[in-house]
Length: 144
Image 1: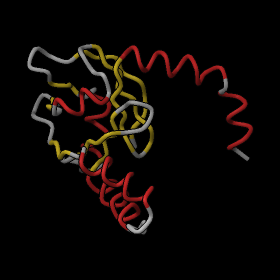
Image 2: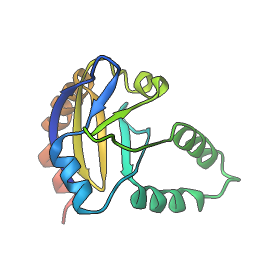
Image 3: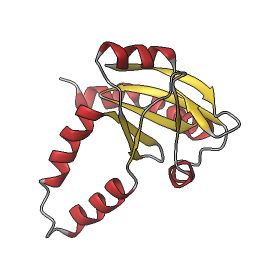
């Protein structure tokens, strides 16, 4: 549902403007509400409400008696925040999420099918440069 790479900046109030193509995809799929939380690789994960609920069910089913499950769920769910874009497509993220992803001003928003990732521009460039080198080898390992 969400695809592409978009470079943006936060506005003077610290809000993030969702790219128009992401807003259009959300509208076409009747998405009004998102959930944002700490992601992996130092970015933020943003899910449409229905996808968030599916992820929630999957992670809730992990046995709380396992230390790794407790640790993951605590970090993942304690960081979660519900956001509804305003009419201009802006969302305000809590400072603790921006701190987690080292977001200052310049950001990159990427669509990764069932989720949106929000990256600090420098962190995305570093990740992309590193992952690009191994892209074909990774494809060989993962795609049959």
